[in-house]
Length: 290
Image (cartoon, rainbow, N blue to C red; front, side, top):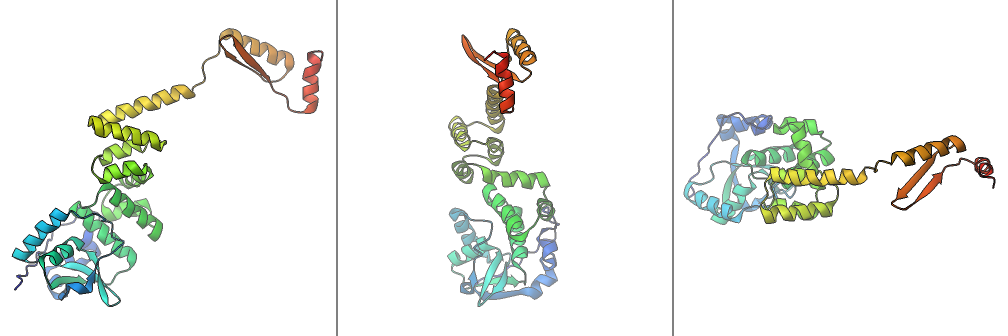
């Protein structure tokens, strides 16, 4: 027979209001005992919209062994969805319980809307540090696009600053190949934030490959990108004109009464004379006795 243990933490969450503020019973041991029920594990289904997309199989196996020995320490949070119960928080425990062969699992059932469900699922994963940087960014983006939350509102809910939320979302503008590197943990979130400052996605990818190959840290990556940006600025800067050329431009402008630009390259160049109407063109041609 499965040994059941319920462990309740009364420690204040470090993330915004935390799960305890969103669901008061979680920080109330008496409230938990009154709200826990056991239901058939086959009546529970995962939330397809939950932030976490990848699960470590070895981690699940390890948790399954622990559940066989000690039971489920923390109940799974669910909401009623038709004839089934949808997981709000605790999918990892549910997966491990199935692997352990449990027929029933302890749950807390709560009524909540889609936005509340998304918030709680996100906060739970952030508390456990279960999300990779891209999953976290996608969750923030979904709260903004689907539930009209602002970055400030999200920051308040998860206990982070608004710039942190903004920088996280910026990772989604990276080249798809670079995003995959972050998911695969070949690149860190810090690398990703720096690479996001480069608009050209092919350049992002090339630098990302160099980072992985040469095992560059964030500071070394910053130096590479700083050099690239400085070279780009120099290319955009127009070369300073020779004093002699500038004097000729000014003389022509004074004589012709219009803007004159001389473009020169070594031994040859062009002279551009602006005119603003047919009559203005005829006036300039008359000055050349044409």
